[in-house]
Image (cartoon, rainbow, N blue to C red; front, side):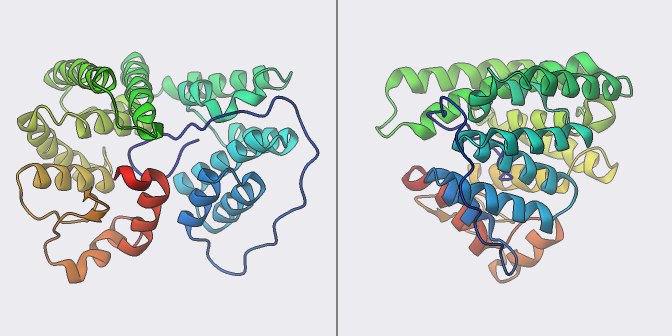
Length: 306
């Protein structure tokens, strides 16, 4: 599953073993849907409700956010065993240019679909989209490499998030190892290309590059270097203001300064925020939810591990 929160790609537990009859539909939503409610339904494995809420979000949004909601609804249907609905949504995504091939392959939420005869067609459709689109990029091979590194990054982190117990030393060592490896490679990439923007590696490749830098906490100076590069890339239309905001807050927190956008939490609460009275306005200007909604989303995803 691909949550619209910034850093993690959720993949959830026990898949259904075979298709089952579709459950009764959840009543239509009367007003805007709070994404935290959809995430809470997902975490509670309330699959019909989860799917209905994400489909409602898709009907209320546009662009990347809508695409993400459609995909998340498909994941909920797959986990709930309503395979026809899942494939209908994935097919819709393919027809609208879905390109996240590596994520779709790795996402365990979709594992129940893998033995269905329709699954290869979904992958083939995404591959065609990727091939056609990558021909317009400056470095398609680099895009795929960065996306693969992101998948590895997320696999380690999701294992930690999903653990009910305190992470053991082996898990922490694995996290340090993957962060050291990806930071080293990202340094080489940036030394050669500058910030890998959308023209070079596409929006998803540029986003993945940001995610890897966001997790390069062992090298604050490198994060600060990238922050300056991303700021320029945003001005040039080659990176998103949201990615810049998250990295700005990450660096500020590491330097014990107030953050600006309220993205960094500790012990279940946001770290200190400069000009806190206007933080929601700053967030809205770059397409982020209010702090109240964001807190709900964070708690639904991370629980007591925030």
